[in-house]
Image (tube, rainbow, N blue to C red; front, side, top):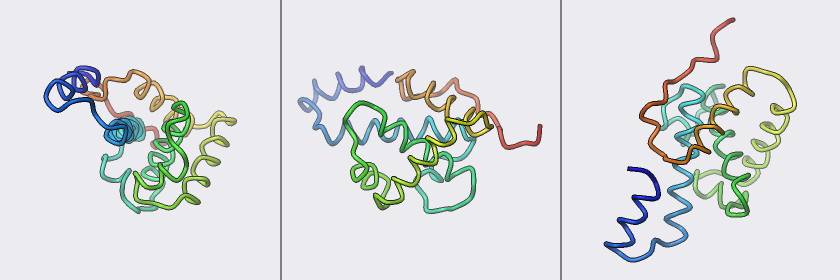
Length: 135
């Protein structure tokens, strides 16, 4: 069942979803896309851990949301991830810098964007790619 089918079922059962529930659903989808791309557990995207891969996944999820139209402010992203808006500002700058370079991090970001843009939110067929091995 994709995101549109879920929303349709919810609307039939409970009326139209609130904007807040849609924003939270899309935030979870971004976090899931970034977690798969960075090959980390979803819980680490929401954690306060400062290890390299979870931080890259978290920053990527923030970047996906911030660049998804005008729906998410930096403060809204910080609230959804239980963080601070200044951390979101730093994370967004970091991702923008990585996008200018041809690095292994850019491959993670590009893969997360592809998963996010696919839009179904399930990712059942997505296989994690470990991009942190030595090449």
